[in-house]
Length: 203
Ligand SMILES: Nc1ncnc2c1ncn2[C@@H]1O[C@H](COP(=O)(O)OP(=O)(O)OP(=O)(O)O)[C@@H](O)[C@H]1O
Ligand SMILES: [Mg+2]
Image 1: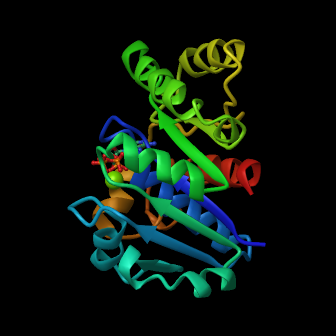
Image 2 (image 1 turned 90 degrees about the horizontal axis):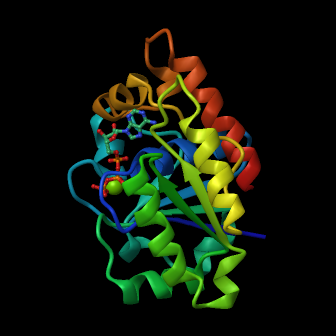
């Protein structure tokens, strides 16, 4: 069975592409045949990421290049969506993905934006159980993520146990067109472990 996973947010710059590229890398490392579909195409997008370095260890395609029949060949298809999708597009996304990953920062404003988007997605009762909040860019010290996770769960929202901490290795990986596991940085291995742990919760 192919798992279709869409990564989306209404706010830009929350870490969708970073998460998309790294999760696709983690699934691949785990032996799952993975495709990353880039619906964005701008600077910072997954497609551009893939062209900066020696290539990523999985296929990255534009939506136009994806033949629906071919999707069945993959174990996981990760869709990285554009920065500010229209609500109508979000609705369609909710219908075609099995898992909707919503990255969110832990600041009060970011959490509010995530809750607002969820309220919209939850209008489709089928979508509720598919939505997973992933806390990202989490300060490595302090309890912000723990508190955010508990508060969201109290509201009945599904939040992944693993959060992705804020490490420079992710930014370096984007610059070099690689994965954080391949960046020469003392925190790179810890950053990669966050992604591997998260990937196991999702698929
Ligand atoms: N866990 C992290 N630690 C440190 N930096 C991060 C992390 N996640 C993302 N970033 C950085 O934050 C910035 C925005 O990330 P990214 O491009 O992944 O967001 P996005 O949601 O895809 O943005 P857009 O809405 O423009 O598509 C980038 O500079 C990226 O390197
Ligand atoms: Mg992006």
